[in-house]
Image (cartoon, rainbow over all chains, first blue to last red; front, side, top):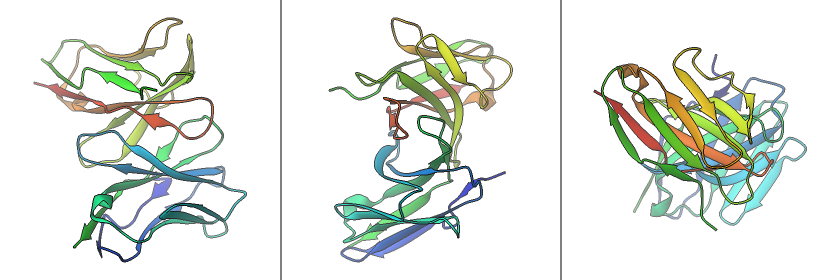
Length: 112
Length: 112
């Protein structure tokens, strides 16, 4: 039972354009959502998070949007840079400091 | 401030041997999590520990796997009598008690 889903396994975007990565969840108990970036042979790097009491959180080029009624969140990266090419994982938790449930990831490629 | 340290980075074991994976959390973090990533899959939660206590082991296989986080020293994930299906990347993460968890570089276990 995949409680966190990233339906796009890959995404290709031109440098300078916006990258939009999507994530859907099914568990209504999730109240905290995070995005991680992962390069091959490295551990995931925390990017940005959002609490269920908010619908938007912004940090530099990264913005996360949460639509609770649709159980959907998205990560916007603008402008996209070649160094952003990596696998992006969406994750959710049901309470602070509890385990994270991850999606299967979306491979982003930013082309020149 | 050093990040989460995992060692070894790579570990090769023959079937039937034991594997010990170590994780030192970030300074000031008392919450430790272990995740496993099988080839071409997302990260799966295994176990959540605080000092000397297992908080959630719902993701741990019932047999051969154990974890500890002693009062002194690193957290240890122990796999007894390894089988080929145990080959994976094992990631440790730590947090100060918030939802944001910070990951180590991982240990890549290969069972031959």
